[in-house]
Image (cartoon, rainbow, N blue to C red; front, side, top):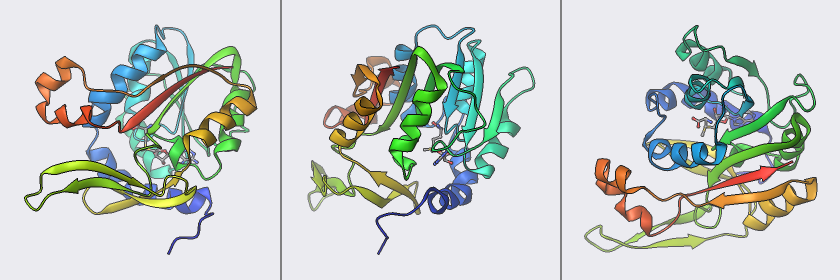
Amino acid sequence: MLKKNIGAEEAINRWDSFAKSYAENHSEQGDLHKEVFLNPTLFSLLGPVNNKKILDAGCGEGYFSRLLAKSKAKVTAVDYSTKMLELAKHRTPVELPIEYHHGNCEDLHFLTNASFDIIVSNMVMQDLANIEKAFHEMYRLLVDGGTFIFSILHPCFVTPASGWEKDHRGNKLHWNVDQYFYEGVYKQRLGDDEKVLLFHRTLTTYMNTLLGIGFELEKIIEPKPSQEMLKKYPSFEEDFRCADFIVFKLKK
Ligand SMILES: C[S@@+](CC[C@H](N)C(=O)[O-])C[C@H]1O[C@@H](n2cnc3c(N)ncnc32)[C@H](O)[C@@H]1O
């Protein structure tokens, strides 16, 4: 049985131990879900990034930082897992000047106030033990009018107890959701047998925390596969049944 309130350190130990297999799943475009859902959505929300100072908060093995740097953004990347950071640095060619730091998104004191035009955080905010501290840090680090874009597992559909209901032949009947109002840590499968510790929060908690800090909501997107991606990966047809992800664009 998991304690409901565990700290970031305990969660990050798991990321350290999964870093190698996680990175093996990531190519230039990240993994399949990132290629199909998240990259097109994030880039549509980002707009032109050349010469923009961008923080990649929770960069992992760094594929998104590299995509940003290839588009001529000035990228700083932070991750709390030393193993992920090692992989990110190893995968970054010298011609891409990405500044990597080891740090917890809940406390990035080594970064200066108002030093970024944009902060992007791809599938990280659900990993944090204290989301309010992290959102305060993102607010502090942005210039006035700066943009904070983050993606998470959709909290209304991916809960501590959710999954496909199948018939005896294994056909998917419908997606079940339970324990939506539970807020705290839970184990989420990543790959075949690994489980990471994620923190579930309701949509209300996400929104009211962001608004309480002073962010303005500009847009949300619940990504669906494009026709182009469906042609390439037809099995994503089932993703028209239920949203896996939600992406927020906020303004300081
Ligand atoms: C699902 S991975 C996403 C990585 C990357 N953004 C991507 O899209 O490939 C989550 C990452 O968040 C990092 N992380 C988790 N908690 C963190 C924290 N408190 N501060 C900074 N990074 C954290 C993990 O080490 C891991 O690399």
